[in-house]
Amino acid sequence: MEKNIWTIDPVHSEILFKVRHMMITNVTGTFDRFEARMNSSEADFSDAEISFEAEVASVNTRNEQRDEHLRSNDFFDSGKFPKITFHSKSFKKVADSKYQMVGDFTLKGVTKEVLLDVNFTGVVLDPWGQVKSGFEMETVLKRADFGLNWNAQSEDGSVVLSEDVKLQVTAQMIKQA
Image 1 (cartoon, rainbow, N blue to C red):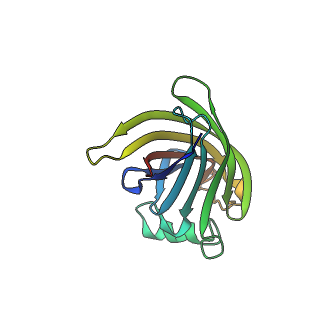
Image 2: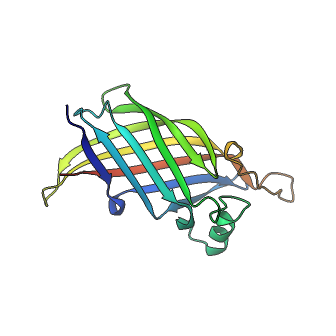
């Protein structure tokens, strides 16, 4: 069966991360420039192969000083490691619209296998004749696994940043002709 090619619609998609700050609130950020591609021949996407990359320099937490710090060697080191990438190894249906995706996630030159929980939100034909599919994906990454070790202590001795980073991706994919 012929594989269908799908590409991400960046205008209707987002890559969001959240990290606990001062252990009382979350700092939320996005990557504003990214690309993704999916190949699948099955209508339920059970054989999907997915690749993704984000430009590290496009990190956006709505605070330029913090964004510059995130681009530095303390965090992403965007000059040396300009992209975050993901390549799926499996995409397994576990319930009606629920999937689990396993793949290689590379950040700051370190590649680790990660598991993402995926919610398939449907397929539609838009008013302009494009077939689109929707997915919501989520995982939790450990900062230290990728060499993101910077931290500081508050006056009471607690850490400034949690070790866990929640990654959430909302993807609207466009079927290519």
